[in-house]
Length: 213
Picture 1 (cartoon, rainbow, N blue to C red):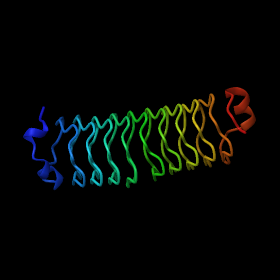
Picture 2: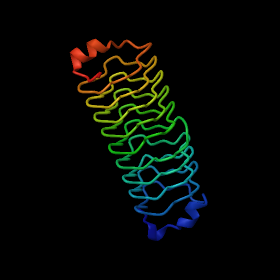
Picture 3: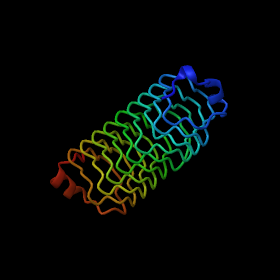
């Protein structure tokens, strides 16, 4: 495995190195780096500074535990099965980001536009998604236990089989979302919008003990 001693970080920053599969860049400063179309699969990017980096169309199925992606461009970025626990996504831009099967427990995903993002089977336990836009996002079978989805917009999102145990959905908008098979135990759903869904608040409170007041 390569390491930062044998890699020219400046060449990486300016986009001259695209094959970075399985490299060890732990703790490296790649702020503002041009990583468009780069292959970072299997790389160790734990604690890496990727603020303002361009990761458009990049394969980042890697270890990014604790990485800082503030302001990064994540358009069509592939994070499938990546370890993103504790990562910071403040002010990212992008669309159709794939987080399928990723480990995102404890990550900061608040106040973001994540429309159309793929979170199928992702571990989102304790994640902050407060105020985020998740229109048409696919959260099928994702685990959002204890997550904060207050004020989130999930219009036409796919929540089939999603685990929302103990999650906070206060003021969330689930207009026309697919919600069959959702686990609601202990969820907080005060002032939630469920128009166009198959949900019944009284039934939820009776069956799952959710908080509606």
